[in-house]
Amino acid sequence: MIESIEALMPSSSIDTSIALLIISICALIDILSPGVLAVTAYLLLTQPNQLSSRLLVFLFITQFGYFVVGLFLYFGGDSLLKGIGKLSEFDFINWFYILFGAAIVLISFSKPNDTTKKRLISFMPQKTTMKGMIILGIIVFLIEFVTALPYFYSILLMNHLTIEPSSSIFIIIGYNLVMVLPSLLLLGVNIMFKERLQQFLNKIRSKLNEAPISSLLVAIGVVGAVFFNIGIRGILN
Image (cartoon, rainbow, N blue to C red):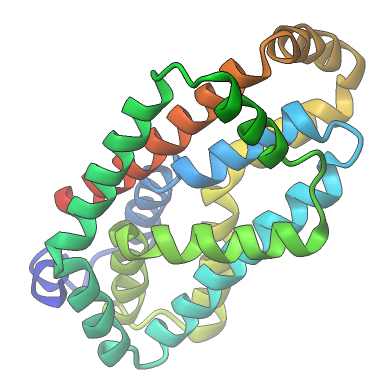
């Protein structure tokens, strides 16, 4: 991974504005986090009255993980990057995500019997807790961070150009905010246009409540698609 990133490094004499443009493009590449978007959509549909608190806790946990990794990497993290590189080089992890995701997607097309339906309904969570969102945030971060090659590249680019630490920290914070921008925008839309958005979401909820098993199978299929996407991103990186 280090060799790949170093090969893509521009000249150390490039203008700071160009470097910021490169970092901005990298942030936009990282903006579509499948795990974060899936959890955001789930909370929008299931926790309309607690969306702000639950979503903000979840986003804080995931991005705090990225922020800490970014700081370690910036302040002499060659050994950390080597460790991440070793993890990402294990193709069996990415292939596991792909195969596991594909298997879950196939399961989502199955037709369970009555006994299985009752068991599945009993497993469906009725509400989320702060503790649950913290755990979910940690899980999503651990699954996805090894595929964040643009993020690692941006941090090493700042090191390569010897940008001041204070400025680099603010850039890392900004990068992390851009990564969750879609979720924050959806939260803002929910706050500003809550009645209209909830009317639209209520129609979706009513359809989902009419067929809870079908809704659960759709959710399982989405989870499978997320794992499949993460595996593909890992292999491409």
